[in-house]
Length: 168
Image (cartoon, rainbow, N blue to C red; front, side, top):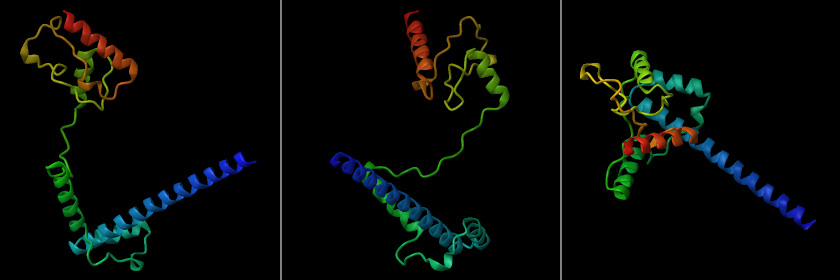
């Protein structure tokens, strides 16, 4: 009986903790939406703010951003914290890299003659230029760096290829 009571208490505590986490996540989302709405309105993006308010079905008349908080200040404080902790500023955005066209993707597949993980970046060994006049029989195919995104079977295959190429 005591064990059943202990299990019940454990389940009850776990459930309460999960509900508290879910509530915190919902509050964060709501706070973020309100901060973004305020920023959009402050910067003159009134129509975008109205559209966001409409899409989120959030009654923003019930909420207002506190006086000492705005999105710019939050980012500025985060950058300061990051700089103090890591001695460099955080990279908050990045440029989108060039996409691989379907013709280049087909060339990569043909060169490797195996399956390439589209999430991994092909290394320079796979990108052979036709103008280089490389004999296809002399070309050494190397596995992608770090075996990123591979399953254990592909990782083992890549390791075997690496060992064989090192021995030759």
